[in-house]
Length: 260
Image (cartoon, rainbow, N blue to C red; front, side, top):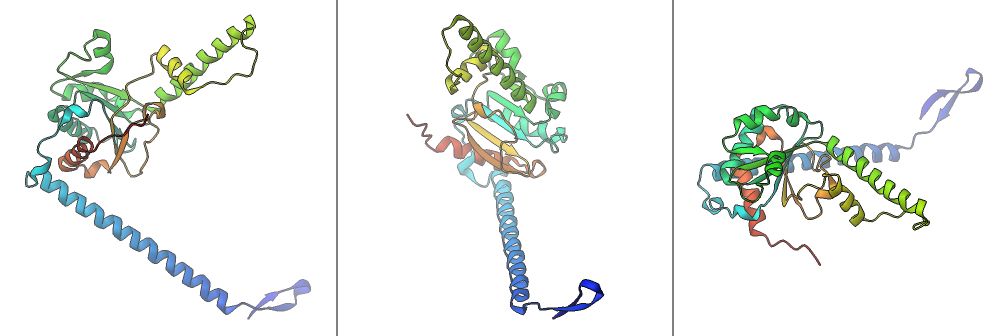
């Protein structure tokens, strides 16, 4: 029972239910215990993955030695923008990918940090060329070098804006001629055509590897992810060759069902 000041400065009795207090403290204890158990579980999983990655990298686990890399026609790597400043780590990751024989790669971070360091990254690779240069020279299918596309969230925003403008101008043209007087209803196919028309309909990655603290694609253009398999690789600072090999090996050995 608590004493609280009431009207006129008088003190009134306020009854506090002891059962409610016990229930509140019990729920707090239960929530913190659950949070601790989940944290310990994630810690255990991370440690197992690190040990497994080390064993694969050292060659002690033979099953990941041979990769059918041709099944990964286009690989995308998404890096959290705060971790993208670790350029040396990114370069090491790309060298691993290059050594595995990946031919087409998209490198993405939402703020464009990697795009800003494009020259440094490309000069550090032994046998790679920018994606747009390969498109310009029309050597995407014939070249032996790895092509690297640099992307950021601004590309997606600009693409949507320009594609929407294309669709609007098309609708406006039909409206003036009296062909289409009904309310505009744009379909996914029409948006695809508009994106292709403005040159923003890039290849759809087969596999997207996410390096960062969160389990999402971090703003990667969604219209390029319709059939993409996404794998969360954990923070960039904990990257290792074994985990990379395992992710690519798993993708190449699983049958992909794309529907009808």
